[in-house]
Image (tube, rainbow, N blue to C red; front, side):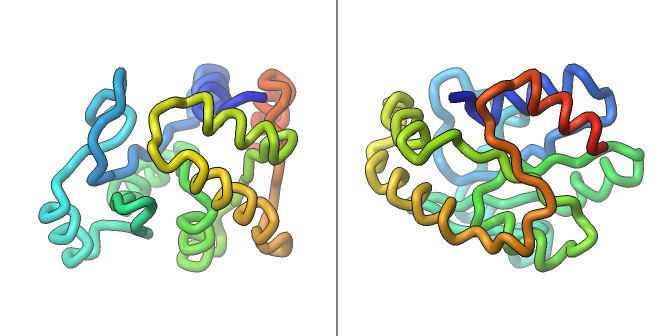
Length: 168
């Protein structure tokens, strides 16, 4: 099974219009993560200030940490004619789709729920891994199918990237 990040990196390398919108989070960086590349790592106080200022398209709390999509960064990419990719969970995607119904929603799905759980356990990064597995299973089952414009089983990176490029 393939993770989302390598698939998105491959899509970006094959299509110069593809740009990921770097989300904000209050969690601590994981080993190897770079501020401004993987996430914008900020304090909870700063996060709350940005929420108050209306700086985010969507925001949420997941496993005690805050995550959000910066509205200005996304809009700037769109003005430049870029494909602004939001790498967000189902909860965030549902809110983003509600606020931007014209957006093309693409879901990368694991080949099986077991593959999703194996990937989460294999990370070794999250103390709440089993809880994430439960949330992942529930998310896959509860995504409103009528709101998904495109969904790909993420089991062959070259095929998925080809289909994404055909779509855009």
